[in-house]
Image (cartoon, rainbow, N blue to C red; front, side):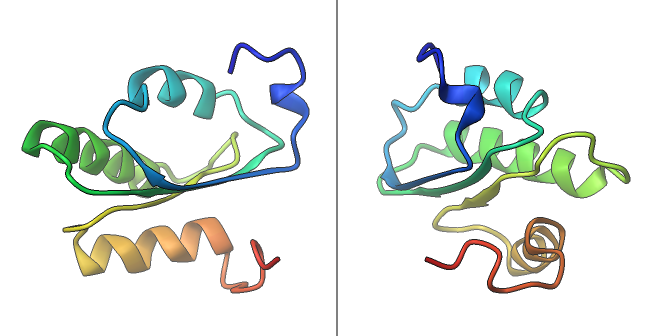
Length: 101
């Protein structure tokens, strides 16, 4: 996020994201992101504390009625199926090809 042109990316996909990923700084960026479509799929292992943090961010995205930012796709092992479906609906807005390569 310190790269000067980071805020101008059209999309960013990260797979097998480790727990070392600075989720708290990313969350600050996420709330300002109006452009970049972000897809984060977290790898294993994840501590209970990190999963709690991921769940709280997903809950916040789901609870927000009008997103003035581009909501990211976040996926991790142990994610609640209902939250998965709700987030998918928000991020892809019913369009499964949104992040298609």
